[in-house]
Structure formats: C-alpha cells, structure tokens
Image (cartoon, rainbow, N blue to C red; front, side, top):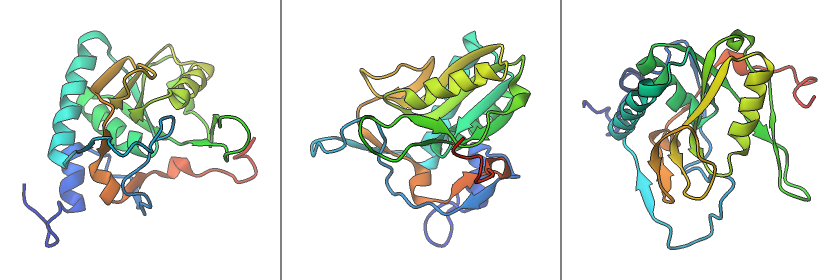
Length: 207
C-alpha cells in the first residue's frame, strides 16, 4: 500500500481501505494509546498488540463474514470513538445503514461510574435488526446501555459486536479478537472520525 511522505497511509487511503463513510468530519485525537475502561491497566507484564490498517481491515472482513452467517443487520450503530471506525467498516462490508453514537461516562466519584448517553439513539432504528459495535469490550456496561436504548426506540432485534473482547468479561454476540493484550489501533495515532449527528444541546446532554 502506498505511503504518505511521513511513512503513514494518507487519510484518503485509510478511508478507502476501511470504507469509512465519506461525509464524516475529522476531529483531533488526544489519546495514544487508548486506555480502555473496566480493566486494571497497571500490570507491567501485559502484552501489547499493534494493528496496522491492513490488519484492521482483514479483521473487519473476517468479522463481517462471521456475522452474515447467522445475522442480517439492517443498521449498524458504532459507539464513539473506536466503534465508529469498526462500525463504519462493518456497515460497508455488510451493506447496511450506519449510525454513530457517543456514550460517555459520568465523572469518577464514589462507586463505579456508569455510562450515560450523550445524545439520542437514532429513531431510524425502529423496527430494524440492529448491530451495536464497539472496538473493545470489557465490562460491557456501554454495550448493555446501548442495547437498552436501541430497544427503547423500537429496534426489532439487537446484537453486539466488537473487534476485541476481554476474556472473563462481557461476551458480545460477535468478536474478532478475544485477547487480554493491550491492543493499539491505527486510529490511536490518527484523527478520530466523528459526525454531525454527535452534536448535542448542552442543556439536554446531562438529562
């Protein structure tokens, strides 16, 4: 694959490779690598697995083939940020509509923080078979909330998928890489993909 002058794929090449919708807007990435919630990140002997864009694409294509054998989604919901990359690529591979959502966590205080929705689950999911996608799943809190919200707007059938799932944690319906390794994704060093549908009225965001 041709490289840019800095030795990395250009954004145009990346978008073509992973089939991210062209109408998305790029926003700055602030974490590299990401530290995933729900697991102890302090272990010094934890292995690290880095994925190139080509490896990511192969994993997504394999995951899409597995999903299509038993489930025919009509819509894919990608949970920002990493789930937008995975979900966008999966929706293209599966030939169905794609909707990005952002689910944020409350600030850390007494007790374990629970995720809450910033924005709304698309009402277009009503009556559809829906696949909710994240990049990494550990505790499953975020996906469980997303399932509840999708059902609330009337989704007919809901399943989940992730690129990575932690052994002993929440088990999504479909997973490409069950591993306890710290996975560094290509977008951990690139821009994050977002969409105008993420825009939320500040007065309603915490409702």
